[in-house]
Image 1 (cartoon, one colour):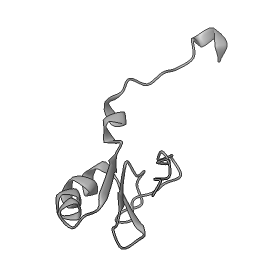
Image 2 (tube, helix red, strand yellow):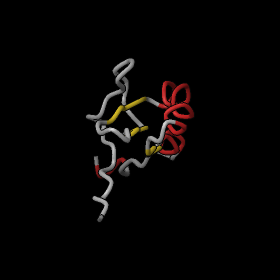
Image 3 (cartoon, one colour):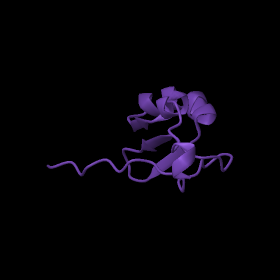
Length: 74
């Protein structure tokens, strides 16, 4: 069985608990997925992992420096 490529989360993906930008996707073994912001992901990811969910955690992006264009390019 070939796995499909993991689609990265975007700014359009929203947390199922609070509506903030999602940084964590839990793909459930029975099908379907849950999206969480970093805060709610930290609350739920351990239990979801125990239940067999695959976790994509992109919350490290929150600590990456923001890239901006030089002021003369804006």
